Image (cartoon, rainbow, N blue to C red):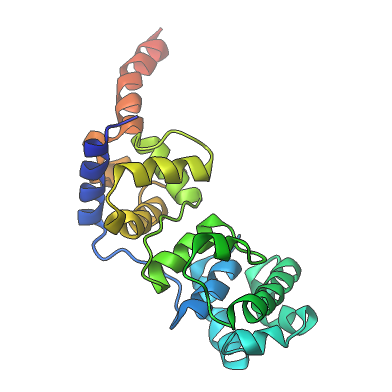
Length: 222
């Protein structure tokens, strides 16, 4: 795995390629981002952004959402997928906010992950983007890109989060996650566009691919 200095150099290169990287979910406050992030599981930010305006008009805060039933919520979020599980989680989350936090979203990891439907990734998204608390969300894009680059080495999101946060200053955590996510969506896809990558010269995956290419050519000629 690369050194902390290498990790920062790679992120510098990627941030220059994706300036201003940020979450693509639309929100106005921590409550809205929490709801949107729960909805984004197994869905796209674009799809969630189509659903949330009407949802937030009907349920503008935790108090309103806590009074809903899952069956009332399901038609409004159907297109995001897994709508039955998500509707149950959202209503339970809102009721927990009302019961334990006066309807406010707590700026604390332990309190957030104690809410129904909220894991570390969701909590880190809300902390870093809406509550001013450094967090480094690790989704499938961060997992793929970080391991390919060699700046992390694990399939466990919690381990990757620990490795990246140990190598980066706290004020870079959220921005770095956004950058890796955007790079994973645009460039380092499941089939990567390595020729478009600003960190190609520092990438472990590209280096291994380049090293193996002559060997594959020799085998093909035999």
